[in-house]
Length: 221
Image 1: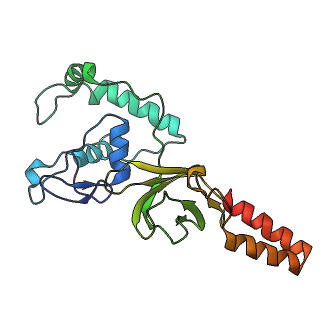
Image 2: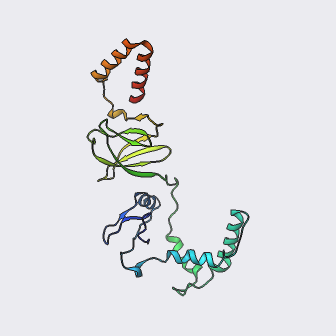
Image 3: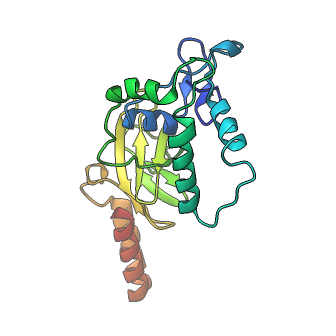
């Protein structure tokens, strides 16, 4: 259960809140479900902040540690000898005993960690591509002029159908100014206008023709 902060909920709604796509995919990867709070109904809000404040006031107040490992060891001892053995104020039960009941229902973590990404909406240009950080990635035919969802990280760029959320295309990241177009979306033949321009480039000079041919091949790669 979470508050309607933007990192979790983009548009609050009683029945169908719009979740942040990254947050939604993290939950799906780890088999969890989000229950956003109702707007204007604070009694339904989870007590997530109280645990943070309790930790800051009780074991860590005034403490300094030389290393992260030392801090972790201190907190482990605090958990075992005080936090887990205390009686919870709201439930009036021992924390460790409650966790022992819940632990069998916990699922194992996925073998593969979640691949975090950045996301945004992009319009498909007249050349059939969208732009991400000055590089260009091809969309399937029929999407020119339309907005689509895009996810990207250091390795991949994914184009997502905004209505069905189906993966349209996935490309490897490209350097600035480069194009990535799926083999299925490339024309089977070089357009006549491009061939004519290449021919004119050759007549202007052998070196110019070589550069133009190399540029054409790179944009088709």
